[in-house]
Length: 312
Image 1 (cartoon, rainbow, N blue to C red):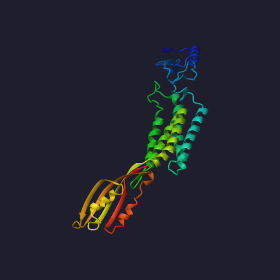
Image 2: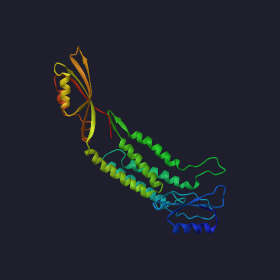
Image 3: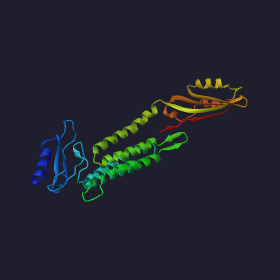
Image 4: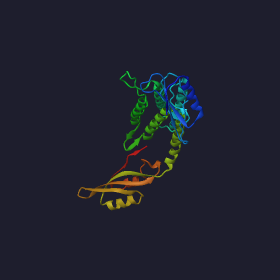
């Protein structure tokens, strides 16, 4: 339902509704073509709803725009105080420091300074959007329209360039994927704090810290599949290709690809194979013990081991 603007009765009725019923949410909207006051619109919510009335005073004769509700709080109030900004910025810095400390003690990229700066920048962008919230919209006499949500959108888009720079490929090993994901995560956490969703930001920080710390230990213990390519050049008289394949299979490595090319009138051959086996994180990129014994064989001219690309 909608109530037309009034003078002191509007403010009194707003205060009454805030204290009388917890099952209604109140939103102040400027009526179209009306410059004398504000409309109050009330929406009924179920008992499972977490949306609560606004605590912002409705002044007679003013046009107000709605705030955003999360839980019992107006997360982006129309009147932003310095205390609100200080709390949001402090929590964003604390969250960035917590995640950054976890990364720093493991000597990983995106450490303390990086996570704090990323989280703080996202928080400041959202605080600025909140500060401009009261001036958003389109004035009837103006052509331009202010869209404050472009600020956090620009932050999320721009952070992708930092994440792309954090991912590096060195040979067959791709590193920095977790670093890029951490930077992206801290950006979203900073936006949560900047928007005033303090409980959501704190919960996200706690969950992120547990995941980075706990899953690292589980990742080291978990068994996984590895792949690598093996190229062997050998003399057929000393080490026939059938015996080479049998020797590889006895090591516990499964052959998923096998190709042989003969040279010098079939006296020598080059075997290209792709192997698969299960191991732990400590086995990543490490050559197997039996490779040295194979290379020491007098009939083997060359033995090249090439791990498959991995990410981390």
